[in-house]
Image (cartoon, rainbow, N blue to C red; front, top):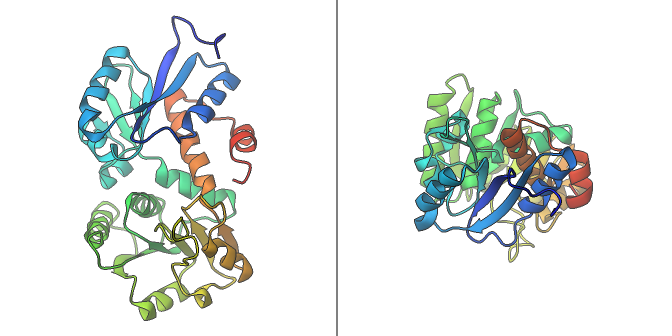
Length: 293
């Protein structure tokens, strides 16, 4: 690292809070070094109230770009100069590119990373009927990207709690932005009869809830008997690497049973390409940092 840093080295960054656990600096710096790019990537603990100051500092320091994690994604989307179509639909961004003229463009790579991870496991979303469990940031990014990638139908399921309205807004946004989509709607996750019926007619089931993550590691978000060989199952949870849902999907012989770790890899790869215009050395990064991806 010390041999690479000089007076011309371009800075890239991650902001959010907390960021100490993030694997982004390791994978991004490894990729810079591997491709001979004169750049360095650091993480900065920034809360929502500090976000505007952080962006102003980045403009002053001529930072090349930065990633954004919670809780700053929505605030950054409000502050940048322009948004990609997906980021605009979602109202949040996790990757910002500083353009040659100094303006900032916000992107969201969560959805593209998830869809690419599916593809790497032989699952395409185009013309498929999908079920998305949850209405949080990851669920919204996945639903929006799937719509942009021309899925046939999206069914969102969430309990009728304070987050249910998020799902209703996502449905309306998708209908407006992608009027060609066959069907997009939201239902109550506690309506087990409806959940069973919809999954029975769907091609892909996606868990974007906290089910499967500690302390809910023994929770499966759907009845086990809805899992069948024709269904592809994917989880956004990556710790544990294999959730109870993924384990049960494998036992049921589902055509795919995909954990969430690969989504992290591919959203990072998408950010790297936005920053540099080059492809991340994904296979080497996967082997070094994502051995289970």
